[in-house]
Length: 151
Image (cartoon, rainbow, N blue to C red):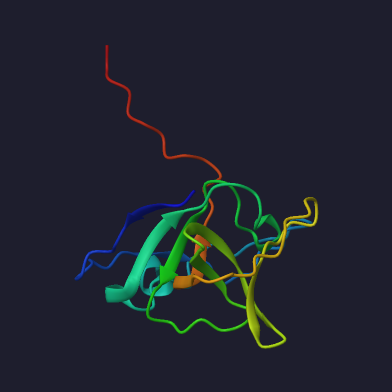
């Protein structure tokens, strides 16, 4: 199941956050720079077309090997033409899915990406509607803390 989270504001405010230019290895620790060398605006970085971008939350694990896990927020651009190899949000025979679009022998197919489960390849029998191309996704490792009322 996919739920629409919402469209960005048509004239969003800019929020530039610190960005360390130092590459951080995911393996062994490395000394990092003690200063910020640049800034990043997540809106500018993640949203390619404000008027055509929407967000959805993915459920399930069928796209886990693409980094999309249960609860991931997908950034979807409805203006980008889908191409073979893109991850797309689509409706196939009336059911919403997020899958990798592939063109095989002249026909489009939707593929899952999870080597642990043998998900079937989806071949549209009649109705394939692509709502947009996933341009990025956000995985929350820790949820934002909620403010507790003072007692």
